[in-house]
Length: 164
Image (cartoon, rainbow, N blue to C red; front, side, top):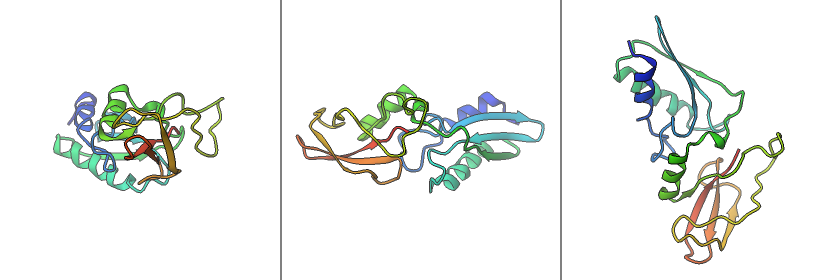
């Protein structure tokens, strides 16, 4: 039987399948871990309710916890409250930047209400050269949670993890 602390430690080693430089705990999608007589219960809030990696993440979580010694693992998906990029820790934000993805900044929800579309009011700094002479190419990058940008200085494309 694993303790909650041991479970959190095991979960810290589970990479996000779409952004493997950060773990599921660093992204803030693991909301709760409860150890009980019948095993572990893990509450997960996906970055998007329709995230295509949700099943893969659940499978990776279960595998990691079973390998660490959990007898039984149940995974509950919680959509309320919705995940927000505010849950990404500062170390994870730096890992995203080093990986070439500009992390979200500021509060995800403006005025207490979620915007219906992505709005970026200040220029983004290129994660490769630092220039703020950047332009958005597409509202969506390789996944729905990222937008695609290009740096006009170094001409390199990069993704921005949208605040939601």
